[in-house]
Image (cartoon, rainbow over all chains, first blue to last red; front, side):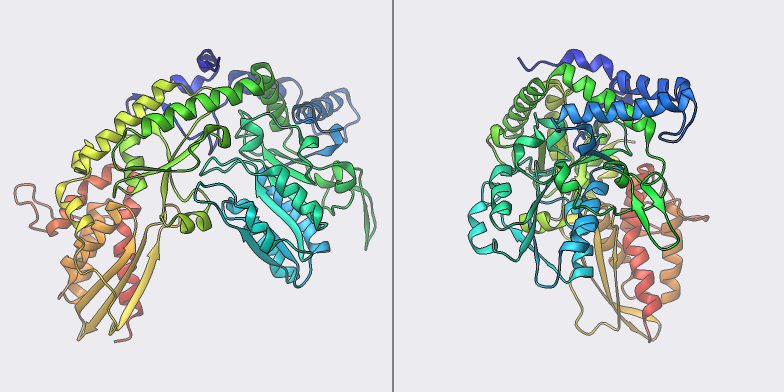
Length: 409
Length: 149
C-alpha cells in the first residue's frame, strides 16, 4: 500500500534535470507537475475542438461547450457536489475566495460585524476579507493555534458571538500541513448564523473530500495543485447559498438581459463566470480529476501519510533542524516547513537548488503565521502522488551538505 | 561554480558577526529597503557631515548574502565621502553585472579594489541572489538621496 512510484512515468518533467542533477521536485504545495493525460487533453482540445462556449451556432462550438460543461460535471462528481451547477469555475482558489468576499461580504457585512479567520490562513483567505472589511466597516478576528500547531478551537468561546458573520478557514495548511477542524468550525458558524468558507486549495488535492458532508457553505480550490493547469479553479456552494451570492464580476456570458441602467443575471453557475472562461484549462482540470479518481483519493491520502511520516522521521535525524507542524501524520498533509540552525531558508534553497532539489523558501504567503512562529521565513518541502522516499533521502543528504558549507558544528 | 565559492568564509563571518550593526539615534538620514519576493530587509542609518558618511548603522534580517553584503558595505563606506561611495557603488554594481563598467578587481591582489566585498563576486553566478547582494546598496543610495545635509 502507498507505493505510487509507477505514476512517475506519466510526468515528463520528472525525468528532466536541474543544475545537472535529476530534478527532485519537492514544491508540490506551490504547484504540482502535470501528467501526459492532462497535457494531451488540453492539446487535443486546441487541436480538434477549440471554439468559444455557450454562443456558437455551429457544431464545433457545441463540442467546445460540451467539453467545458463536461469538465464541470467531472469536478462536481469528484467532490460530490449535488449538481454540476454548484461548481463555479474561477481563475483559481484566490479568485473563488474573492468572489465570496465581494459577492457575499459587500452586501451582508456592516460596521461592527466580524470575519473570524485562523492564524494559519494563506494571504488568499486574509486579504480579500481585509479589502471587503475596509468597504463595510467589518473587522477581522483570528483563532490562535495550539502549541501542537492545530487550530485552537477552545478559543471559540471568547471569539464567537452574533457579531461573527463569516467563519473562514483553511482545510489544510500550506505551511504547517495542519488539517483544519472543518466540522467544528462549520458547526460554530451555523450556531451564530454565519457563513463558513473553506480555503481548500491544499485539502481537495490531498484527501477525499465530500463537499456535502463538510457542512459548510462555500469551498474554494484550484486545479494546478492537483495535477491540472494554472488559471482555473472552482467555487462550490449549495444552490441556495449560490443564490444569495451576487456576481463579483460583470461582463459577457453572465447576463440574461442588459439594459442601459440595469441588467439581469444568467442562471447559476454562469452568472459567476463573466467573460470567455478558461476552456482548455477546464478540460485539463477534468482530465486531472479523472487521473486522481483512477488512482483513488484514499490511495493518494495513504501515500501522502506514508511519505510525510518518512520525511518527518528522516528530518528528525538532521541536527539543529526544526520542523513547524503537527508530528501526527493523521492530523496533517504533506507540506513540511522547517529551519536549519542559523542558515537562512533562502540560502538553504540555493544550496538545495544546486543539487537539483526544488523547495520553497520564504513566508509562503503566510506573513501572520510566520510572525506567530517568530521566524521571518521557513524552507518547505512538499509532496504529491509522484513523490518517492528516495527524494526525501536526497533532501536529507543535501541538508547535511548545507550544514557543512555553513560550518554548523 | 561551487557552493563553497558562493558561501565563502568571509561572507559567513560577516553574516554571523555583522559590522556597524544597530540603529543610530542621531542619524541625519535613513532608508529602509526590502525584497518583497524573499523578505530580505535592510535599514541603513547615516550620519552625514560635510559630504562624508561619518557613521553608518545597519539593521535588518534576511539571507546570508543580503546581510553580509550590508555588513561589508558598511565597513567599506564608513568615513568615505559621498563621491567616493558613488565610485564604490558603481564598481560593486559592475562586479554584479548590474551595470556597465569595470569593478577594477585584480585577481592577484584580492580585496585591493572593493575589500571584503570582492568575496561577493560569486553571487553573480546565481542570478536569483543578485538582488539580495544589491539590496543594501540600493537602500544606501536612497538614504543618501534623502539626506538633507
